[in-house]
Structure formats: C-alpha cells, structure tokens
Length: 90
Ligand SMILES: [Zn+2]
Ligand SMILES: [Zn+2]
Image (tube, rainbow, N blue to C red; front, side, top):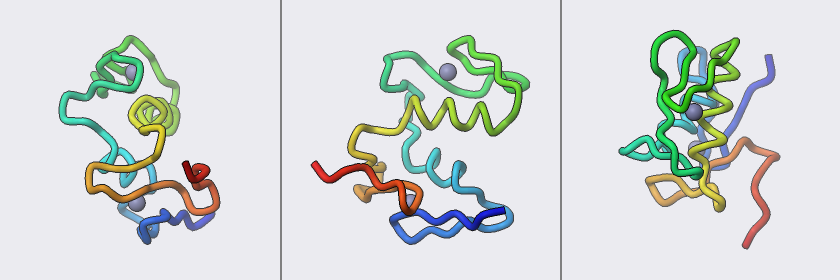
C-alpha cells in the first residue's frame, strides 16, 4: 500500500485514510455536491443521489468527486489534494 499524503501535511494512518480526511474537509454541511444533488451514504454502499457502488472505495471516490471544490480548498481555508496531484494554481 502506498503511503498517501495530503498537501496540507496530513499523512494517511492505519485508522484514517486519505479519502476520509478529504471528505472531512470538503463535505458541505448540507451534503450538496457541485452538481446540486445531495450525496451521502444511505444504506449499504448507496448514495442519496441513487448511485449504487460496488466497493467502499468507489463510494468514497464518488463522494469526493461530488464535493471537491474546483480550487480544492477545504472548509478550513487550506488546500487539500493528494501530494503529487495538486490542482494547477489559478
Ligand atoms: Zn451521489
Ligand atoms: Zn489535507
């Protein structure tokens, strides 16, 4: 497994994955994604928008894609992206 690191300095630990970290900083309080739909886990690997994922990784990826803002700036005002995949500076 590759150690994942965030541009904010967060490093993936055994009990806290990169996707959990990113969801924590990006998920809006109303769970509304960039597409205007509500996305949140409902039941087993199902999203409120109707998506049914096969794996939890797929669901996390879907939620992240929906919640990550264009500039990758989280609710704490810092930018978060997997190290090496930083979005281009505006
Ligand atoms: Zn969804
Ligand atoms: Zn971060």
